[in-house]
Image (cartoon, rainbow, N blue to C red):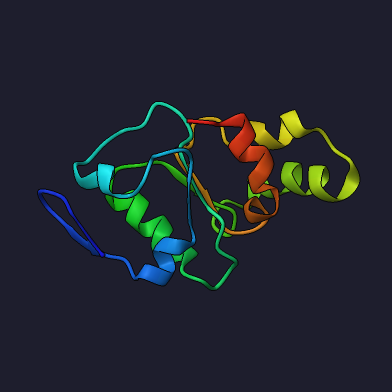
Length: 120
């Protein structure tokens, strides 16, 4: 499907769209205007090498502040500590503060916890 804004056109395949984990009813088409979200809203649960870089770029084009653990590796330690070493969930979720969207591993491994913490 296609997302259009006043200044860009973004094409997303249906298989890529299926990797978009939408919290409640927040889908890609409300982003048709350039928007700024006030809290974390989008979680891409696609595995690495499934278009997470393209999705990250798309979110940047739409003026959002996404975190991609491949680009911003400083978020990984708290997430991996929670997932693999019985670390703090609060510390792991704290890495999402200030971001609108997240993608790439290990976010996909803790989607249930993220969706519970950010129900909107």
